[in-house]
Structures are given as structure tokens and as C-alpha cells.
Image (tube, rainbow, N blue to C red; front, side):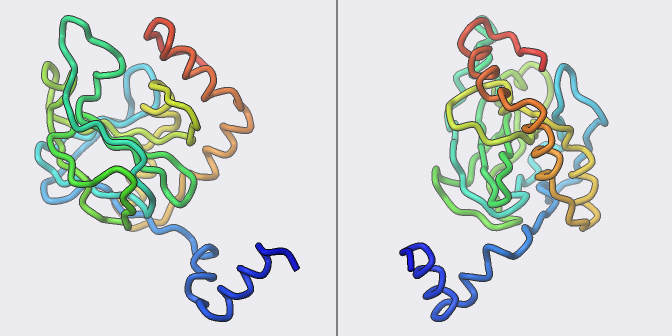
Length: 206
């Protein structure tokens, strides 16, 4: 018997709850609380949601790991670098295999590599990055997980509004299926996004 099978068998015998956890469906929650928030049905240029509601608590929409945190706002209006426009940002990779991106935050409440549960407080809506010259909001993007650093796909790949609407009502709607279809249709998305990020700051159309 291979070591992997032995380990799974031992887990099922001695730690049944751990073994079954992998088969449990993910839990989703509406990722904003404390103050009322609203968001338009669309977004300029690509799929995302600008969620307005100053000082609202930003919550983990599902269980996962914090894989990237930008704690310092390095954006300047003169340079307007695409890599700094988000200001204070958090990237969460959910246990569902989906990447969740929050930017323009006013505060960050988590650490790099921290595990979070659905509804954990991770940040506060603010006006960092280029939101300093627009309005207080949290940019929320949903995308596939890319292994190498890139800017544009991270910002949003599928429309999050229908998932936000569902989670707000307590409906357990997962973006995983929609993302899987998109990855199958466009397997080079991460590569193209990385190239765009490195070349001229122009988001490619895919």
C-alpha cells in the first residue's frame, strides 16, 4: 500500500473529522458588515465590483489562506503605476480553489499565510491607492489562482455581483464552476496577464 493511501486510511480511523472535511462543501458568507454597502451591476473595463460603504468591515467570503498582503500605500497620482493603484490589498485563496482580491482598504486585519474561516474580519473599507482621488470603496475581484505574480487577472475575471447577491441572501453559490469553464476555454489567462503586467500596463482583452 502506498504512503498516501496509508495516511488517508490512518486519518479516517484516528481522525475521522479531518478525513471528512475535504469532502464537505465550502461555506460562503457576504463579505461586508457593520455598515450598509452597495455596488453597481457593472464595472469599467473588466469584471469586478466596487463595493461602497466607508468603514465597513471586510470579511473572508469563505475559508482559505491569505497569500498576499500589501500593507503600504505606494500609489502616487503622478506615476499612477498599475501595481500600486490598489493601495492596501488582501489576496485570499479559498479552499474552493478560487482567488478573492480586496483592494483600496483602509486597514488590514490579517497576516500573510494566515488561515481564515468564513466571516473572519480581514480588513476595513477605505480610500487607499487611487481611491484617494475617486471615492471610498473596496474593489472586489474573483479569479483563478495564478502561480506567478501578475496584476490584471488578479483584479477580476468573472462578475462577482451574482455571488455577492446570493451570499447576501444566505444562498451557498460557488464561483468555482464558472471559473473552471473559463479556465478550460482560456487556459493561457495567467500567462497573458503576467505579460501585460510586465510590458506596458495595458490590460489585455481575452
